[in-house]
Length: 346
Image (cartoon, rainbow, N blue to C red; front, side):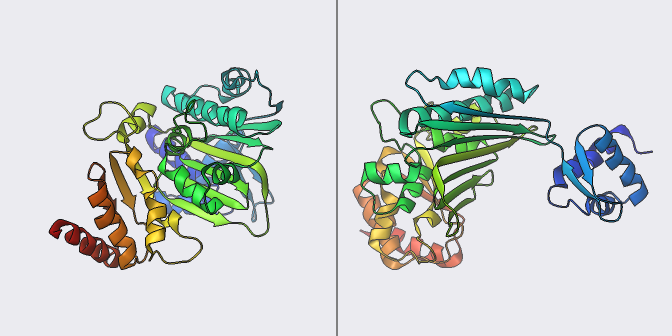
């Protein structure tokens, strides 16, 4: 029989991978740990009897799934006296059970920030709150019937396109009510959770723990209002203070002064980033930060004018903003360095 530590590793592997391999998790785990299918079946049966997995179908075609440990749904009317913290205390926190303090803090911060956005910005009349958990993760969802976050930002900031609103959201410090809000809620919530998604209209924005950002247009579906979906592992070691500190510039003790910009979000569809107007779209509101990290993951090439506008013209006009970049390929790096050298020479 495996030792206790080995048993825990095997069962953790099963739980963490069963969603991806619902029909062949036994063979996957047997291969991973070099033990027999018979031994693995004992572990799976224990997880089923322990209430962490569910099984369906006959032996040959049996499918396994993570069992939902708790699930809460609440339909609420949006009213002037609505309090996000009260909803957290009465509807959400009791369903989460015993969580590590850092994970509970993240759920508290993220849920109350997103609910506050609904109350003060959505222009909706109703909101649906969902909370679900299994042995691996916690999921939170907030769905309102308002105007839609991308449409709202487009209208308030006079942007050309709703997709431009997503780029601005990704930068952070974006708010349509600067007198009352800093615009930090969505930025930090998306970085605190493992997975963070916004669905509104026909657009879908997703940010994951690995700093991957996706913007998808859905031709066959549309979300009325705004749906925020967040999930985090029960075992996450992330802390709110660490994430906040990561986005403070080197010479700042406090403050959101450093941002991480996924450049690929400046593209519409499969267009290439070649023009100065596209570069200016990226550069909007950079002057609100001391340091800007440009992430070129997913960008295959950039044009000379695009690079020149950012790395020569903008650097000359805004020397107080420190520009750095990561995850660029060889072709993109060449364009950046060409513009960077031209700025140094001038």
